[in-house]
Length: 374
Image: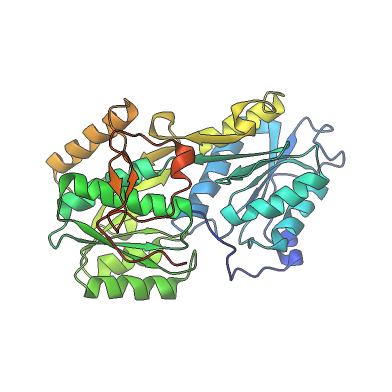
């Protein structure tokens, strides 16, 4: 989940600090947890922790880290923090409560975090998905396009109409990369598969999501996927309308017992634990984690959700084999030759682009129906 500054989720500073912060104990008067032998760690979520999507995955990761670190940490959490100056106020409030490590988990939290990081050089900021760093701010993300590609394979094998639908937020590189990976995956097993894309200009607007889903279904789409923060509405709409769905961020299979195929999901707990432990042990600064840190399927940061009942055993076996090939380095989901919608070669034959190159994606590949908003 990445994005431009989002509208909505307008939360006052008082609400953000007094109602949304959850701590496992009283604030440390020493500011760094020295008195109690613990370090305070803060998490910011742009939406609710139970959104069946991006924020739920991040929240569950924070819970896993908290359990793994035990008494070494005290955790503060703030939900529904918008990508505005409000994020700065929430982070300042956490620092006032003793936070020495802060995870701003939304793409648009990056600039506010950079501002706060300048004012607090002894606090470590670990941002989710950002493309900029600072001496005390590193970024991390998972190469989730790898599992989005596998979701495309599932869609390409299961579709009856050869029409797939992708509901997304903003035309940032990670979103465009996921659209392309999905279509590439579908095309690898079904040359006739196309992917129609709708941009909602919002990370979580159930009304816009339902409208986009119904419009795509009316066009003959029989598999829906998404790059939205909250996934519930789209998965439920697909199920209610009798079509299939591929999830994103978190396992939402419980919402679609008939039409769920699989999904690209995050596994943040081990990474959060690794990052926090490195900070506490004095090993974070100067390590790869303090820069632009990226992990994939083989590292366990991203995974494939369980298969739905609709997916036959041979399709499951095919997808698992492709997943193993990605882990073993035999398969690169986005590899040349790749052409854009106009037929221009964007990745030459035989070229395996780096993640840095892919995170500059500004185009849609052949087979994608719809244009990039400019």
